[in-house]
Image 1 (cartoon, one colour):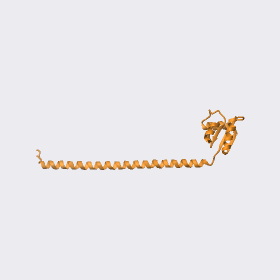
Image 2 (image 1 turned 90 degrees about the horizontal axis):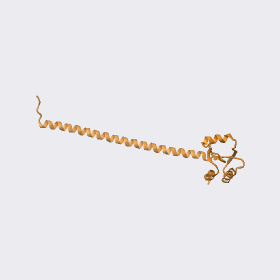
Image 3 (image 1 turned 30 degrees about the vertical axis):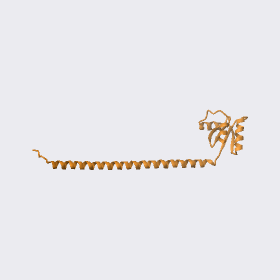
Image 4 (image 1 turned 180 degrees about the horizontal axis):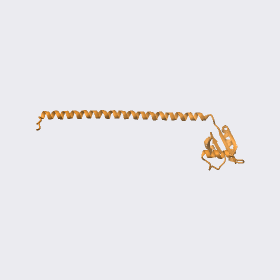
Length: 146
């Protein structure tokens, strides 16, 4: 047999259920808040890390630049009787740069350096290097020093 419940009993049950629901809702809200906070914290941390990394990189770059500024080496590979080679030497001399002139025709060292620079197809003279980096010919040198 079933028991008949009074209205009071059913009200109590519904109140209990609503209390449980409200507790669950508040727990959910608190969980959401904590998740949001942790997300914000992780975002802040990642931003801080990225800022630190960029600062470190800029410091490294400035250090690298300062390391090579005192060693200003110019190498000019020339060919006999070439007027552009002579002009390139004159420009470097006028600017007060220290440079070496090396005859490049038939010199295997030139070919190795050009392959290393990735410009093995460059067929013109003079071939000018600054701190072991290929610059180009006379016009490129003129642009660089202007």
